[in-house]
Length: 348
Image 1 (cartoon, rainbow, N blue to C red):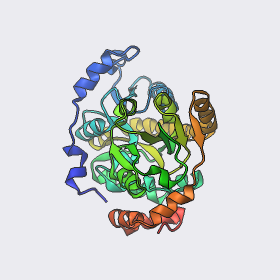
Image 2 (image 1 turned 90 degrees about the horizontal axis):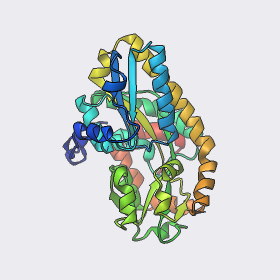
Image 3 (image 1 turned 90 degrees about the vertical axis):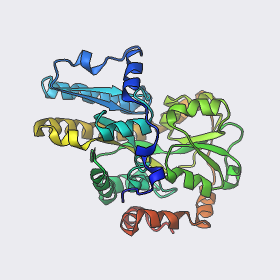
Image 4 (image 1 turned 180 degrees about the vertical axis):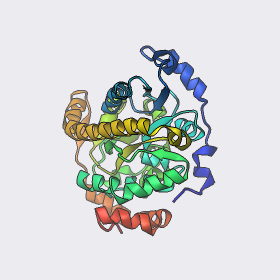
């Protein structure tokens, strides 16, 4: 279902001009602009993302770009722009839609600002394990998301990346049960699926772009945030957060989207090279994230974070006393909700 709520439509949100992000990228050390490094290439592409440059997804995309250049005999030049170099997620989403940016890697929940059903993977406490996640996202549920993105003017690659199960970090105290959330100001990404979850759980959600999250935590605008462990590490949130509660409250992934008109005009052989390498990269990244989770937790512990296993049942029980699941079923529609429950079981 395409989002029809005007206030949630990303095209009405303030966008930063791509030229500003490009100029900023020129000033960063180690950033080579496509026009300089790939002048001889026939097809020059940029892919922007908010993910930090040392995240495994970025490292693997850089390798994929090298393979694309080799397999196409220099016809393809793909440049990665991590760490919000081309603007925040909302900015880049607008630029992809307009055709100013060719590709973006962004979360389904962020895409829900345009295509509501894209955020269905982030329904609170829906997925219990990765077997359920990949069966759904590579199956009927993911297909429904991609169909609506196509209707909204986006190309969407058919294999999503793993952004992990999300955990909650805080500054002042550990979160052991749902009652500890009362009055807690939690930074969440821009998207109703997040704000509704944390409001239903009794916290105070505040929507802030990830590029501004560190400073919001540092200055006390918010008390905590929620993210996968790898992003907590790569974005250095451990410097401004002391506690991490392993809530596993939602799973989120990244889709690679592109401007549909641009994609449709590409020759079939170029599409094939790009798609093959995006798929290979997605599968490598999925394996890496799952294998890397314990190492990341150990590393964060060594950096001073304190971890705990909260009472997850208290969170689920709290949601059952609210209209959270019923409200989202109504918004997503029976077809999408039944597709989700096919993989995870009944939620309400």
